[in-house]
Length: 373
Image (cartoon, rainbow, N blue to C red):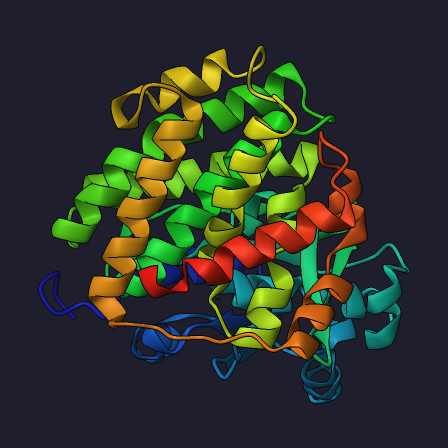
């Protein structure tokens, strides 16, 4: 293929698999988004890898039953390398299979019990600018709609390639949801009680990059420099939360995805609006501690709270223009399930001790403004 007809991502994929071939790896597993099937097909005959296994049928937020079933079909203990070329779900699935390759059972993952030491190498090329999973030692596992966090040092990739060419075909709705996820991660990392000078530097750098570049790619989707900037920002956000973990913004978001099917990044953004207002109005949290946040969001508002709310509205309006009106209603039973699905570990990492009433009010505020979607 010539430069004008290369399949999406072919250059990146060729580079990674050529590196595997040069190291004489014989058993390589590649998990990838469907958009990259043509690129893999185009180069397989050029790559000297004895057993190259390519899998693309990775669902969003895969259930642990899917992970367990998939693991039984793969020679995980014989692998030299796992390559993940995709978004958060592809990367998380790869991390979970990596843990299983070390000798952990699929269901021990739900208890965050990672066993074994020897593992294949793990290389990643993210295709969305949002989750930052390529920069963290965390993974997400689901069972019956409930999210479980998995964390282990061995889940951190050995090599990451950030290339905007992999994100050019990312749909606008995914671009928005991914970008706001990285944006919210950065804020949560900044205010986390576990924040360090290093994590705050990563978080602030990401926050300085995301708003202008995200709005730019929504009007000019093929803007390579802006997409590269977003990949870098998401990676910085990932590095930040790798140190601090996320907080209440994420803790309260998971049920919105599980119960109502709201994409993860949009769910976090919806939570963060009323959460920030509650922290400001009830707890006075930003009175003495938000000078740096005020500065990075100054173009959007007079202070951090005003700037966040303006940016949130801009992103939700853009999401609505892409997908049209989204209506969701909440029953009393679903509200109870939302409360039950709050991630306690992440909630404990929040700088303000939220009450049950606070959490209920945050959810109520989301549903009162649902017409904005």
